[in-house]
Length: 339
Ligand SMILES: [Zn+2]
Image 1 (tube, rainbow, N blue to C red):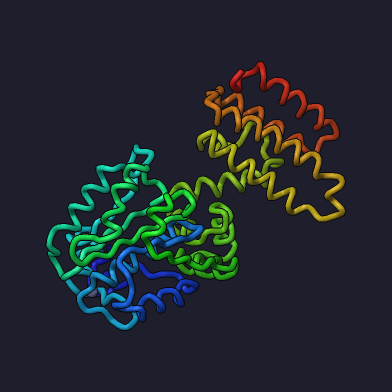
Image 2 (image 1 turned 90 degrees about the horizontal axis):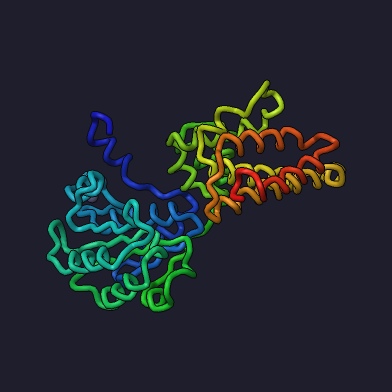
């Protein structure tokens, strides 16, 4: 955070993208009429979580303005520092595969304590679809009648995974999706980048702008963009596979290769479809075979697989590509990839 606390604090408050404005206004005007348990549903888990944070900070603010939280009060400051005593942010812990019952029990106890800053306590559950069944069951009573004045904000991108008992106890808010151009404009503005780069980042996250934003400033995004560039520049590579292929995990490389071949098939016009679709689909099948073996637990020698995949990708335009692909596929059974 920069040296000027007044401006930096206001700017750091979660602000939602413009395509969520309408929903946000509806929320603000519903005031005291609304309930206490909400399920925020979006295709983009980061977007649902961002919206949840935005509602939470406004609810906790002591000097709430017509357009949202003030960004100056004690509560807003504490929120930004991640030290707000009346906010519980529940999410899957690192190294765990789900949100466990113990986390939900602690959160329920937290709601029972007296509010420290104001008169309300807020619990956010991010990616609520990751609750174990036991955790979800232990949450039911809190959803029905939380102790004291509380707001419960569950967010998810996979609402069907939540038990019906949880869903029926929450009011569902479905977040509208951004159009492609809205997503690009907003993302370019957030990251201070051009539309082309924003477009590439959107591709990395399946067209989900808030996820692309979250990823945009990480090393991972740079790495993945370099990977995608390397696909386009494959034929300029003098010898051996590009360094970027070795720099990422095999699963990342395989997933991107699958996406790349799919994009290329989709991008074929009618004239080229007849001549090129077959080789792209064959290449896709080869990569998919390796992918499925890795998914099933095979641990192939990465260097060998990367070198072979690269050779295969480079040969796609060759008139004997179909034969090469067949050899690759038949070698998978005996070779390094799983056996
Ligand atoms: Zn405030």
